Image (cartoon, rainbow, N blue to C red; front, side, top):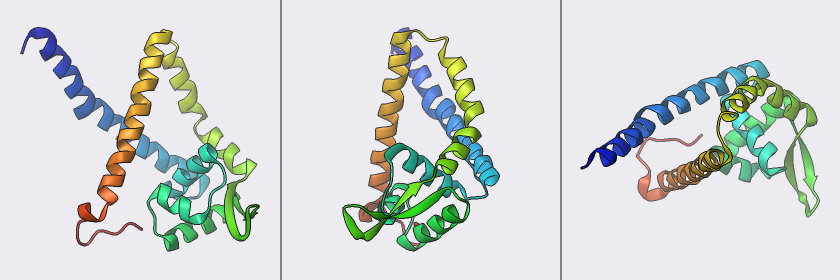
Length: 167
């Protein structure tokens, strides 16, 4: 391997072995602190992110997004309703079904909880030019899709390990 290839491999190794896992751990810790401040669980915070990003969803869809059984998702929704973060509404397309939608208060509380991180991130990104920002965005979107694919793979029946529980 030549020097350039070794340098590239070292950067990739640092990203995949240290920087990204370290960032992921800190993100999990931050989500735990935010959940505690909101009086909900970390999975509940994930649900609020899903609703904020994708809009109202059925309990089953939310269960899939946050990797819960339907029973666990029902308990999650009950907690979020009690905390004033979501509400149950009839599905306008099928009045027999219910949708879970975020409340303005719930979205505002989550936005406020992450405001410091958003401000710091914006400050850090200000040092990047447009091409660099496009590359960062391309990587983050690619990593998001890759992570989703890995989750689907690990959820598949062939990948399940005896004794594991999703909810």
